[in-house]
Image 1 (cartoon, rainbow, N blue to C red):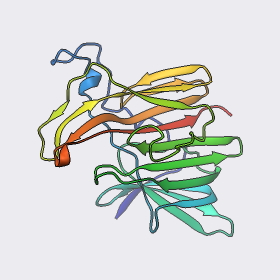
Image 2 (cartoon, rainbow, N blue to C red; image 1 turned 180 degrees about the vertical axis):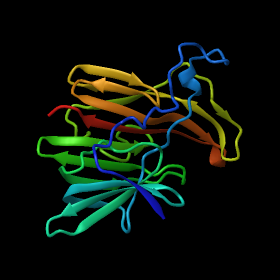
Image 3 (cartoon, rainbow, N blue to C red; image 1 turned 120 degrees about the horizontal axis):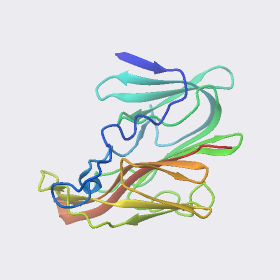
Length: 233
């Protein structure tokens, strides 16, 4: 197994590569964002169990060339031992600072029809929540039902005038892109997946925002995944 090691701050350059916003309407007559593929939902993989809470200093971020490929985050905890967890490799690195101490909380919510697990990752430094990553079916559905740990943050799904970008596959009748609307302390931003926006002192990356209609049991569900990170203390 080969790996590539990142020893400096994991930037946000990976998100959106290949998702350049073109200033024209797509060939279907709708906005090109309606036809954009999602990056995928950001999920974590633990050696065992479905949740993990600890405090440690981020030691390294490694992209493992494995099957399937993953990104490994290694933390050194009190006493000198390491705790690691992986995320799926979707071309996105969590915007964490190597050498910074974080309180880390990873948790899973409900699994829906084997189509999407729900995941939450919260990283807190001495100034408060630094990074929040969420994958769920609808905002505050199976995770953070009482509100997000970023005080005042609200998220809503918006239905733009998009036709399905995927139709009649083996698993799905169709997949249609959505937008996510974010509001915090008077600031707002509206994003498709593949977009990055500012929300006051925060940066928002949307990795997935779409509605799926599955063939099995004519299952209909929204799916979304986003990361919000503090860009100033």
